[in-house]
Image (cartoon, rainbow, N blue to C red; front, side):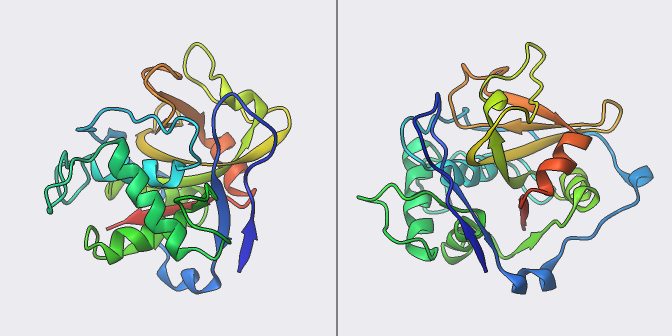
Length: 232
């Protein structure tokens, strides 16, 4: 197991993703299609872009975004099967459950510890919201899952320049690494070779709360202990 903490000095927006790579995950890899088989798709989001504020709850926000977005099997949920609204409060609840599952000391509340993509996937499964989850190892498997299965949870190292996307929404991993962040990858553009991401820093960030990475920059970030989880 590899666990790396995400936080540090004050930043314009809150980070909160830790790295946890369990070797047992290798047995649950998502398939990688040939690049020629990939298709462009934007999975429709049925809920508003969320805002985690000063809480390090990005894993919960990404998971709530996944629930609220269409995938190949079902329409995005505005309410859970139990009747709860899929909103910021629910994202915080998922974050709390993730902190109870991970190996990081402390739990939210009261401790704002941050958490891992793996822990929030386990929280989704234990809550009966997904049947299983797979891990996309490498760029081609990530693009394949995004193209055929639906949105994926993306945990990456965050760099200083990424706090402010370009005017066209591009994220460039430049400057110093400042922590870790979890987002929802919800669109693949095979012509422009880019992946669009839904963030949880309000719809004022980026373009309506979204930004994009080129495939090459995504490949680079995946190589820096990035992880991709495809809930099913």
